[in-house]
Image (cartoon, rainbow, N blue to C red; front, side, top):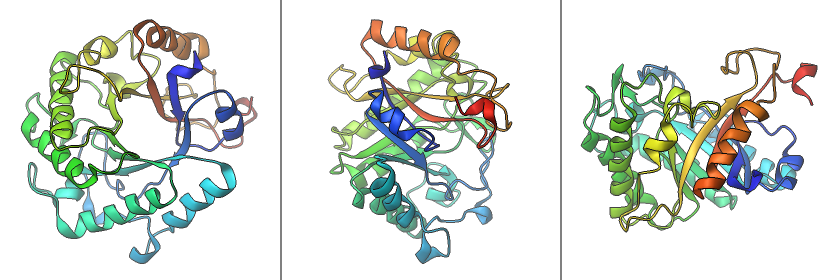
Amino acid sequence: MLSNFLAGSVVALSVGRTLAAGVAWAGVNIAGFDFGCDINGACDLSKVVPPLKQYNGNDGAAQMKHFVDNDGLNAFRLPVGWQYLVNNKCGGTLDQDAFTKYDALVKACLDTGAYCIIDIHNYARWDGNIIGQGGPENDQFASLWQQLATNYAKESKVVMGLMNEPHDMPSMTAWATTVQAAVTAIRKAGATTQHILLPGNGYTSAGSFVSSGSATALEKVTNLDGSTDLLIFDVHKYFDSDNSGTHASCVSNYIDNAFKPLASYLTSNKRQALLSEFGGGSSDASCET
């Protein structure tokens, strides 16, 4: 059943065992462009720290090269705030200065030969308002993805991570409509060879992806030709008591009550999922087995 999971991301813990287990990708997040964004989809742009040496941040380019060369990683998730990319103009065009900086990170990732995940880190919101459900219009969200897809249409290793951790969504049916608008915009822009990640409700937790109705709603999202090729469910799972990743101790490996049910669903429905965030405490013994 592990073959239904494309990757584990966020921490490089036991990477060798992860790749040996049969997953296709393993990697980490390279954060900085998402700094200042909270779970309400508000982003304080003064807190953004581009993770690139030329912009006075961490040397993300060197980090990615190290992880590829020394640890065998082959995927990097590059979170960024929606507001940052459009200079706080919802529905606006990509800000040239901001996009130039973010694009430098994407290109540094591509230079390693790894898959590079564009992750819009807004929790399905703009300043507290839910996309397509009282907040930004679906067309405004689709416009963002149309512009990004146009820039990376020829880069098959760019992965379109539509949205980080939607939560408390009043309607999964409405959210699936929003996701479909973004997928359609990406494919119409000519980005037809890229994976697209489809996130569900409940912070897209692997433990509730099926039971919450996220899988049922999102399985109806299709490419222009009606297929679901390269449309991958996006899931997260932390091993602490409340699935937040903020505690030192791990309470379970969540195989029986999260990963097995999800893997069973994926197998039955011939779909795949990407575990794009997971983790536990860095040193607690409960997280080391």
